[in-house]
Image 1 (cartoon, one colour):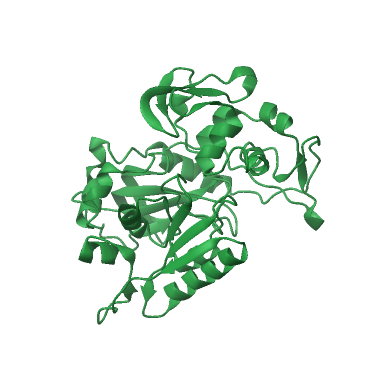
Image 2 (tube, one colour):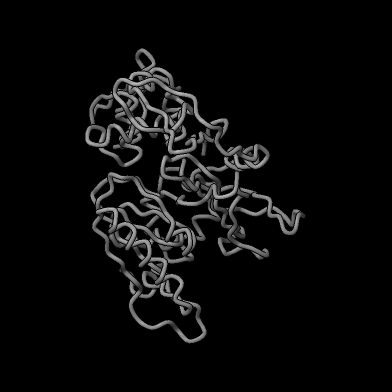
Length: 358
């Protein structure tokens, strides 16, 4: 799991004074290796040699040649293109229809400022962005540096956890290791003191422009059960106030017309198994309600939690109302049946484990 040296920040000034972006300027100004790495492409696959395609897979059909610093590549299956084309595929956007949006996001990830696309414009000075907590960023990088793929033999506790949760079949459809993996011995902290080291499932939390805001960590025992700690699931500290707002764990890239949104990561895996579509986990009800998704996504299924408090249902419907107001087609799905006596609620993992389908 790799990250750029520091988060790229969009810089909006007062009065919506946004940068105007020239596509050629952006293409030649950004470091495409850093941009594509930030979008989840394995940096080892950007060395000019043959590798699996980050979009369509295979074994050696892809080669990143970066001619003239354009981010260009060749794939024997899905064709050739420049950095914008590959970035669009990684973000679930259409490289032609959504070109202006792709340019804007690449500029943002590349650290030259977010703004409005203009075919023949120059970059202008803007007000400074929020300053990230560099100590937190270094901590995020240190954790990420030790994360291994879920398929690695040393990630056995993570695979056992998924099996214990009834998600056996997801082991044959694991997400990109740049998005989620296993830390063999992640420190657990409580009230400022380290309480021990544990295996952990670590997932990248990304905002709409695919920049990483932090990590979600699920602490485990070596046998794949939840660790005996004060908080099994934790987020790394905020880079700044509001950094996580709108972000999600983008487990699977857009490869169709419909995006599936859940609260929990395990529920997202269940929805992936049941629907076969791209599923993202927002982690909490509040984050589900606030999540921001790419403009190119026209159809959304919101798989809400059924909570005794009503929190999950309200969040799912509030998100659906907002997305529908943006002109998207939206469905809200809630777990069928009644909440068991004494339980706080039902989620879609519960449905999957009880029925073997959703």
